[in-house]
Length: 120
Image (cartoon, rainbow, N blue to C red; front, side, top):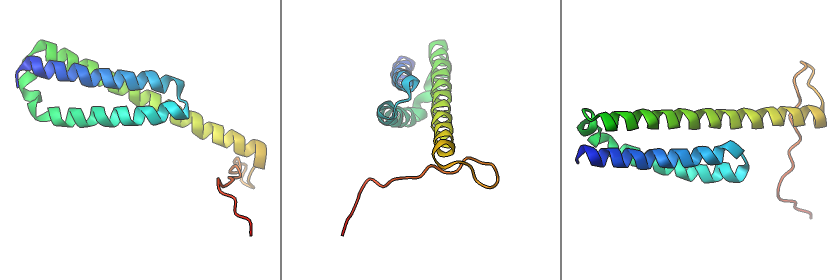
């Protein structure tokens, strides 16, 4: 595979990661579900490309694109961590508002309601 092909494939993977980042900014459940598939696809494509990466190692454009991809992945990581923190903290707040606190002073777990109701 030529260095130009490596660059082109790196650009495609970065584009997918950037697309996932745009979805992660809203951090809605629908966006999180959508970005899961996008990130899995990007990861698979990068894994397929990995054996050809040494061919682009001497190419400055490929190196620059690899740095851009690394930055996009770091941004996606940060956005995922922020979304996780948001939902964890929201759950803690919900627990403290609806169930109070434990004897240790921690927010009590929010009561979970099942999605299926069976009556006999």
